[in-house]
Structure formats: C-alpha cells, structure tokens
Picture (tube, one colour):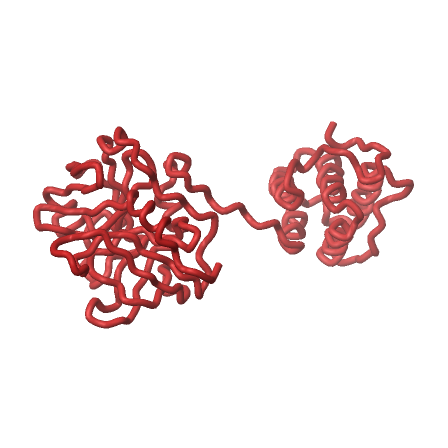
Length: 331
C-alpha cells in the first residue's frame, strides 16, 4: 500500500505502545509492546560483548521496569564483531510487571509493506529540541529488499533502533534496525514483518500476529503432487480416475479431458479442466476423492489433499455438486 503518512491521532496513540531501552551505560534504543508484558526491540540494543547489557531496564509511560538477563531472548544471542548485527537482529524482553498496567499493544499488519509505502518509526531519540531522551517519530519510505532486511530512504536518527515501523493504517510492518549513516541522509534498514512473526513463534496469538495465509496453489503445484502418486503413472489408471470423477460430479459420462500419452501433460490437462469447470471447487474435490478411492493407502495423497483444500478454501471432500444431482464424496 502506498499513499499518505500516519496521521497525528494514530501516532499519539501508538506512542503509548513504545518503550525506551536503557542500561547502566545509558540510553540504548527503542522498542514496543507486542503483548501483555512483552516488548520487542533489536538484539544489538540489548547486547554487548559480554551478553545482555548490565542494568537493563525498560521505560514505559507507566513506570521503569528492570529486566533480568534470563528474561531476554535475542537472535543472535551474542553481539557480533561486524559493523551490523546479524539477521534477524531481534530481541524479546519479558517484563511481567508491565502486564498489570493494562497497556496497549502495537497492532500487527496482515501483509508486508510494498515499495513506495510511507512508514513511520515511533520510538525515542536525543535529536529533539527538548533536552534528554524524548518520544520521537521519523517518516521513512520503503525502497525494497536489502539482503534479508528491507531498505528505506530517509534520515534515521540514533535511538530509533528497535522501534516499530507502522504504515498509514497504524499497523506494524516491521522493526527498524538502523541507519546506513547517522551523519548523512542515506536511509537505513528494517526487519520485515515475516521475520518478526518467525521470531515470535509460539507467542503469535498473544501478540496478535498471524502468519500470512498461504496463497492458492498453482496448476504446477497440483500436478507435482499428482505426479508423486504412483497410480497416476498408468494411462488406464488416469482413465479410471476420470471415470470416477464423472460419477462424483453426477455426470452421465466420465470427466472429459483430452487424452495425452505423456503423464505430466495429461495431468496438466486434468487440472486445467477442473479449474475451468462450472464448479471448479467441486471438480477439484472430485479429483481428490476419486484418487483417494483408487489409491487409498498412498501417503502422497496427503499433499494432494492439502493443496486441494487450499485451492478450494475448505475441505478436500464434502459439499454439494454443481448440478444438484448428488455425489458420493464427503461421505
């Protein structure tokens, strides 16, 4: 999504989810609350050469909360030797005392930001007109992939590492990693949403993040799964399959597909004919159910079933057929 910037009302509300990370050495960076008592930031914000930085604390609008070393999970878990911390450069801080404050959490987006989208980093910095560390924002525009990270254009200030990056809709698209140069307007990088999801893992439901649904399978995916079922190797087997499909679809004849001696070509034509049928979902379900009946103990059927379910948006069997004449599948 491209278009406008984050509006002021959303920015002010989201800043209530932001936290600043400090240690005995002073201000280290930003972070944000993703679930009750859980804050995300960058690994390099909380790590030093000896491990978790000494005297680590999370400052939220509600109070200041000490963070024990064992309450930090970071990837990587040790500070690197290079200029930039390795991918994914994320850390999760368990701060149970914050959970009791009823704090808001940053809402997740359902997709990645497209190139050209304006994102807003909501964090903390020392680069405001007021003295000390203060809440701050910066607008950045998505450029595109930069290795495993995503590049942005704009002037990234020190202190924003670990801050949430949200789109104009106020939904989190990633975690800001850092700048190419804190002395020049050369842009920077952020950790994409997919990497954040992978890092949160079992905490996804609590954090409100859900993996993006898998896209519907293409014809080649279905054909590859069918090729893995040995029964489809025989031409007479494929003809029996079409006959059985016709029965399931309530047809007075077999499911009509142009004959081909080459197995792959024939299967492609079967899949394409299913897609073009007046009820494509019913045809694909009939394909799976007929194959299940003809080769009931083949483990490769699990892959076919999974793909058919994704293609039809439901179960691989069951439901009425298009012409209302009834069917044997879904028994």
